[in-house]
Image 1 (tube, helix red, strand yellow):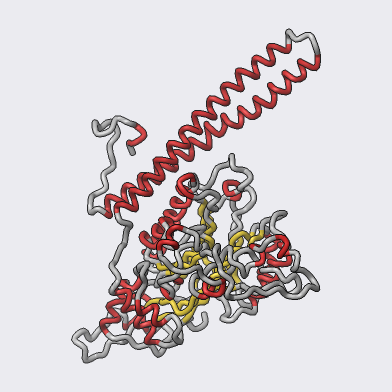
Image 2 (image 1 turned 180 degrees about the vertical axis):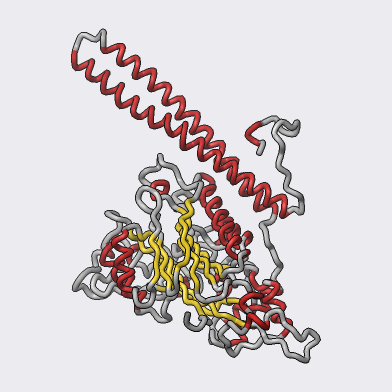
Length: 538
């Protein structure tokens, strides 16, 4: 295998490739492949979402075959999960993990349940050592169709963030470099965001370099509370990573504006100073640092940017309804211990020889910061002066990386959510459980009611004197029984399955809350007098 990389370039993009629904799908995804192939810096790991058609995936693979020779298209659900991973290095293992909680089949017009959303997992080997592994987790979580207190899908999205955090944490505990990529359909510092960064040793790469970036669109209550002015379109791209709903994206324009685009028509530009009221960040790159002891150093954030903003060269439209997020991770090696130190033998001296040397030299205090992983903690919403000072400096300045490591040491370590965060999740679970239990009962009643009506109609056919009345009774009996049977199956299969998944989710949250409070998790024995309700016995 070639020399070990000292930098890793990452791209995540929602392609908007829904068959029969997404406009100009083939033309746009072909151009996405072409742009990935000529991108600078050259991408080495690419995560794609909403790439539902295998033919589109093969098109992108053909265009990128020279720089990204390895790839995996993930099959899931009735219509496919739309997830794919491309890589410069070999993919040694892959898995498609489906979310236990992911929408409802009754909402067939939304499709989340039918596509089988989940997490596409890949182990990528970039070097010969056992820990020279990148574990990539690519996802597209449930869309936020509702908002506010009536959002019945928020429980699903928090559960999906929880599943992602568990996979990220498990991979990090194996000593691998961890990447969580995709369209998470969440806002920065939201509960879903906090679950990922609090329960896995990863950080949001954008907030490392832009700790004061927005926490939602301008009209969102959390963003209003910050008291900042409405950003411009340019500012939202450069500072807030607004990958969705911004004025630069032609698919967010009004229909009369989109009619100005097309073959042979002049390019329509957008004034960078245009106020951007709706632009927000839904796409993320979460990254760990790898096994510092085994690899002789750790990975830090060198660059983060919004990408794939170019227009189609002939059609004039944006390549997707989302822009991409790009990031570059840089390997920072530990300093070689000198023989005249009190500790003449460094635990890293043997493994450090396998790492491609760079000019970065850290002192003993900085080495300690890397070993303890203190620089992994997420920046506070107020940010840090160091990240703010270095955001516009030369990214190749080794001093900026040293400052980045030191800055994390001053942040309080929060390996778990505060108890109030778990209480909020439990409240969402209990509210959703009550809703689903009501749905289960109502649909069961509906089945038995229509069964009775159907039998009554069949009996009435014997006594009616006219044929057209008999036909109407048969039609009502048939359609009603079909609808009632579907509701009966929903009650018997789907809702019962979902309620059991919610029980598992609730138990995991209760366990995590107990650990956060310094208590020993206790699994209640069946038959104890503490709780006679079987639904609360684990």
